[in-house]
Image (tube, rainbow, N blue to C red; front, side, top):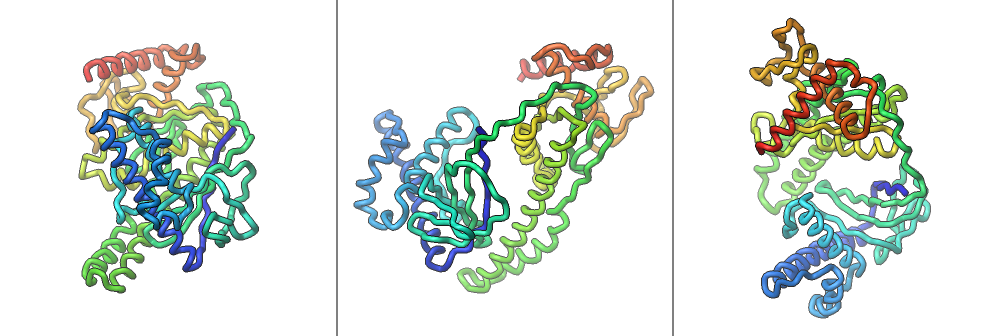
Length: 398
């Protein structure tokens, strides 16, 4: 079973827009109400309220807040289920503690678990009727969850979560000759161990002057005026264009990588992107390359298309370790794009890192799952063994 999401553009009429906006507000209100109820109950009685307990209290709340009956009841229940999922993610240390949703925070969405039907170029939603939809991709499978959302530019979308009987392709055997290491960077988006270089499009940097100009014009308008709202929409659309350009680039890149017939395995680093963003000199450039989104897409596309993905530790000295003699250049700076080892080997920083990432990944797989033909080589063994010991030392010290 595979679950995929298909996102389409919606074109509601004025009445449907009002209903969607009201549903966004009600879902946000119920989420915040449920969060406060859980906190109050835990602080007062040390009792953890489940989503089912909160759903049972909805009937009494609707008697007090009669406007909650104007929207679909299941969208309110889904808001409480999402709150429960947020707490589960927090206790698993995958997310921070749930916070109250702001009215102006940009999170405009609600979910419907059922009673959604596609009819030609329209979609039937509970209490909203038939809404015009633009379907650019067909799908086969059982519709599970529907999410209606709106961005800051005022555009409406529907995301359909579809479960199909399609089974993931089993990954093929890992072979060193058809394995590629990927080193992510800022100057170049990625350098592959086979020598291929993927340039960084730098969409934000190219659009920065235009964004600043629109932002300055927007800030000078009178608050609450129609002209200020018009400029706010222009600014949101300008930012949206950058986001769409970046997503388009990443989707095309990850699709091309996972469809290389001559490659079976990819090795990447586990980068601590949030920690890197604390460097204010590089934060904007790091955000623009979207390393986290690249990894996320590689993970699920490798699962879909039968490729292997190995993620090595973040403490591996991929750029500093000489692949010829195994010594480490501790004095290597970020500005040094090339360096010469004491053994006489000349290294390109990014290409060396990509090859070392590949080596570390193969050794990590060999240690975990069995022998690997490529690791019969003494150089590979010595470099990989040193790397694994160094990583264990760093982990124990931390």
